[in-house]
Length: 268
Length: 363
Image (cartoon, rainbow over all chains, first blue to last red; front, side, top):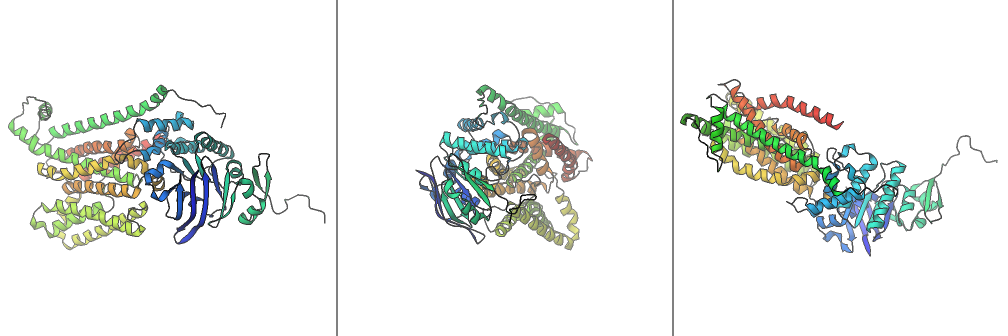
């Protein structure tokens, strides 16, 4: 069963077409990564899937038309983590994670015992329970990302929409966050739709990739089919070397174009 | 990551983690309530007619349901307490509470700690309304001025909101910054019209000026009952939206992703804050600084969560204005200081102190 799918999606922002005729889907419990150069429309696709932008076409969540869902029902199913989440500096970690329960609290209601229990479980699942009373301003970059994921998890979603979850992190924390998302996906049956600008990370973690360029899908499929030197060179105008590991997952390394200083010149 | 220790904190330990915060919250409410009670008592027995503090307290407690206390007060003192002092204290508490609550609400809606209850053309509209009433309708009687200020204040906010909505081309959309800027533009425009009016009828400048600086000297039980319905409705609506203001703190987009409708929440809270501020302004004139200082004090006491900040602002604002008014009518007795002058004189240094504390707490 597909957990989230978009069909023939078109988005126009300020009269500029940003996405045109995009279709892709992520099966339940899978990780679909959107890749493509800056301005290809990756974030726009994530935001349209989260219901934050007007779009033409169809977004299906768990097989149902997302347009027919109420905002609250959608928020219970789909959790969205933007590239740069707003973290109110004086709010505590516990208060922030409890915000994830918003779609379950009635308009004039207050979070109840069950909501606190779910928020606590999310805090513990992401190993940030010991920071519960710490102010968000005092959390480091890697800890923040875990807190944001805890808030997303507190909504008990089936689909996790992540816009560049690792863009602000060093390589070690990037890896930690990606491993964590992968763990959540495997343990909890979460479906992940994310943008990832790091092609190697996309190749290592995603089950399937969609390569976007100028608002259209250029290639889609398993990482080994999408991450080819030829495709990357034509879309990114970059010079790369792609090597495929034993697990069949490709890694992509940029390669310097001009000869390096002091490099051996070919005899000629 | 996989090798990290999965510490499952036992529930007792988790409860202990929460404990200090709920104690802090309770303590903050206790402190605020005690402050308001003390301010009320002091305001009741201090003044031109010297009332005995103990007898005053007894006479006040006697009015509490199920409490019967014999009071040694003379009939004259009783009349002073219940017909002169008390309406003024209650009106001051209402006005201060409403101004502080509206300020806190606006700060939440606009995610901006610098805005206050006079925002969005509210003060400028009230000023223009009162000026119109004094200049053109003054002969019709003093009862017109509060109504004109009330209507002017609401009209000022409505004009600012509509201007902002037209400028950002959405009635319920984003555009917090556009709305604030529209408020500044509308406010400047209304103030310019008011200045023009005043300049053309110089004989009214004194009356308008003393209204602008704020005063509770005309307080009566009638004024209390007149603004009570508006005060009650607006306060209840604002207090019910504390949780929504916490969600809005993560920004419109994430709030929408959490299933909230930020534009709708903003419209409701702005309307309620405008009503609260307008009812306060109608009976007191323009009183600055309460709406901006008090919410910061509330945050210092109980943290930034709006379900605590809003009711605390109401209590502290009420106590603060009762005290300020007591100073206003006693310092130069029998003359009175404008209460807006007193709130600014106390408020400005207090604000600096609060900001300093905030700064050291965050580093």
